[in-house]
Image 1 (spheres, chains in turn red, cyan):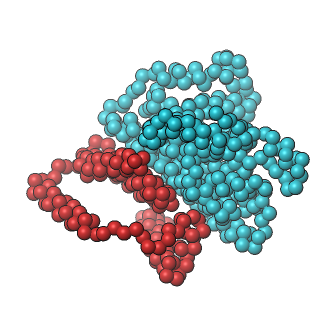
Image 2 (cartoon, chains in turn brown, cyan):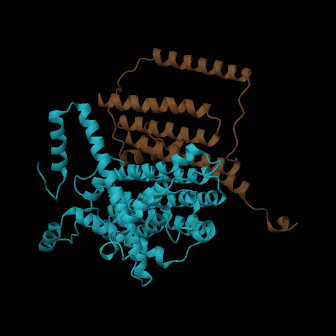
Image 3 (cartoon, one colour):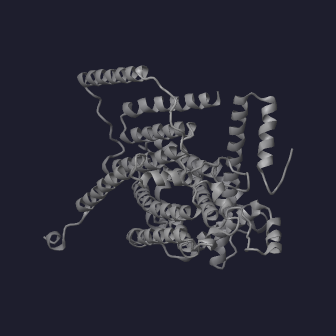
Length: 173
Length: 362
């Protein structure tokens, strides 16, 4: 009962702010509504006792991605800017795609039979998370971990190259 | 009602059972929400006021002045009077500001501090939530505060506010890394992220002593980065009075300004409390090896006094920073973080791992 109460509250927050995110005409407000959606999702993870994922959700999505989005909005847009209202044809197309996507998702969820997991639950404490992250056996995540590391390294080098000042003899011209 | 100043577990469980006798489960849940919420609210308001008073007294101490002396004995009621004045001020919203975000920003900043306080252990059993990932939770929640600052700066439609918010944002995002890495260093030593377990692991000695060299390095890095995280001097260029009037909260007045003001001091408390938990043993009394008599005397002091004593010490050190060092420029701040603290931190993690693996800690 208690869990259901929390679930309905968090779901209501997620639904309302998801709709507001895509309907507002002010881009920074959209980012803030998105923040609420992400924080409420973290709340759902807390309800599932999956605290580790919830904290990662807060750090990476709410604290990281949304801050980056807000930063880029701050640097590029002015407070008086409004997104233009979409034309009727575009709105109709978007509605069509949304409804189709919703129906597809609903059908998939309805047809799937949810079973309790057969394997015993592993406590997500520091030791188990660390072990899983760097082991390369059947339960290990060493390869994805390394692949993502290389991707991030490439992104960082790319960002530095883009942001770097030109060398002196070119900038003096 | 059972009450024990050394262990609050019996108090909290007796409150829970007392509520359960005459309320349905949902009622108990809502009543406990309200109780915890009101406690946190009262704590933030009262402790915030005490910290503001302390800040002015500490500042006066370093500048060889007396500080506030007129209102109440030794000026003790000065901050209360200031707060009442703030409550009565007119709330001004600038023209062409984004009203919704402008009003929302102070609430984001203050709610984030409430969320972080929920995981702070004040004494044994006196902790709202004891997550198995407590340390990660506090750092995750604390990283949300910057959003409120960025929104406040942007929605005020004022160039000083915007510049202050950008500086503050860049600074907080950079120093979050150092805070996180120094926390990880101590998690390696503790072997757990659960705050109650971390404190329990320090019953034989605080981590700053048992972890010796890497723990001391991590403590210094944490203090520097924590000071920067809270936007306090010498890292207060986000609100540099002489160039930006007041930075991101220039346009705010009355109670909304008070929210930013209180949140800054409560964040100072949270940083100090985390330093206390991870390095100074939380509410654990000071124990020395096998000196039974000495340890028994130390055990006599209730944990809550140990906790607040240590927190006050860390707060005093951070205030000492503010009134001693000159303000850093933005390039100096970023150089300090990316060229010094970050490499030191990474090496320090390796050192700590080596020491834990070889069993060289006490």
